[in-house]
Length: 178
Image (tube, rainbow, N blue to C red):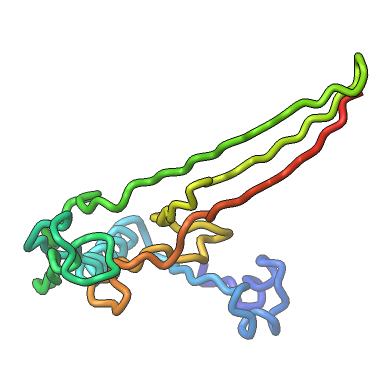
């Protein structure tokens, strides 16, 4: 690998050498290592760094108890930062319960005969007829650009919903069968 020049690498990537440094989408960070032992050491260092910066919080109360802040969907005061570097907190997965999900769809239809083989059909479709607000718990959209719930401990919007599912929709249709 020591004999490969930057120009050769740029040609191999099918990108002109003068375009690559200025275009952030065309650059890919990679490391060249000597052997699998060095790669294992690099992966272990990255894992330790990940553990030190992304630890789970400690649970100090009931996350499904009374909400301590208005507008949140779980007890945000039930969590505390894990301040010991390199350790995970004691929070488990899926321990907080959010509000339930209800979606009632109703269709009303009526057929009006015109002749023996002909008829009109009128339909009225109601989606989420009771207009219940259903929170969005997972990101949606292309590349998940809508963050639904702020889950970072200490953020100002921590524990509050930032997105919701569709509201009530009403749709009318008329068909003619012949």
